[in-house]
Length: 140
Ligand code: DAT
Ligand code: MG
Image 1 (cartoon, rainbow, N blue to C red):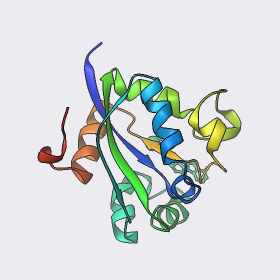
Image 2: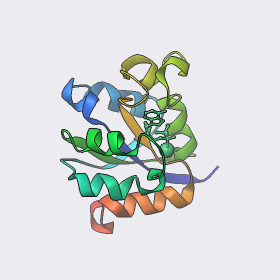
Image 3: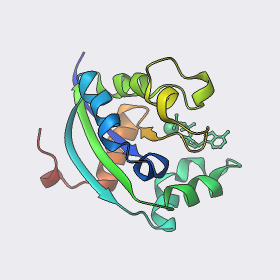
Image 4: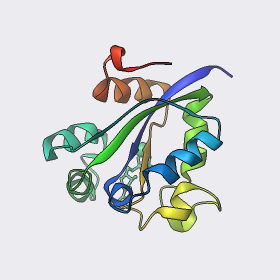
């Protein structure tokens, strides 16, 4: 399997509860390397653009307001099969269905406030990384 990069976001419910370090430990224990990271506050417009693929879904407005409510930590994770590995460490979208030991099982509050975002495919990873980071900010 190839070395990949994926875009991860530690969401407001997790930054608010000071869980950045615990979540990063889960990534690092799984062999994912944090090659870029910054804490930012999204505007409602930026959150809306990032989640544009979901704009027809009933929860879109709520999702964007949540993502813009407090700071997030955006990061690029690198490793063997990083996209799928990150999804595995994150756990299912709905924490009630997430496997034991996953981030969402341990930390998520609800299907909406589910602590982390992770890209779902190579194409979306490339677009999402470029949304937040310039090439100069990526140090492998
Ligand atoms: P994931 O974040 O696991 O890739 P997704 O892409 O289907 O999940 O949805 C993006 C985010 O939207 C998800 O992390 C939380 C929110 N969301 C998804 N389904 C929802 C629902 N039924 N009610 C409220 N928020 C939801
Ligand atoms: Mg998704």
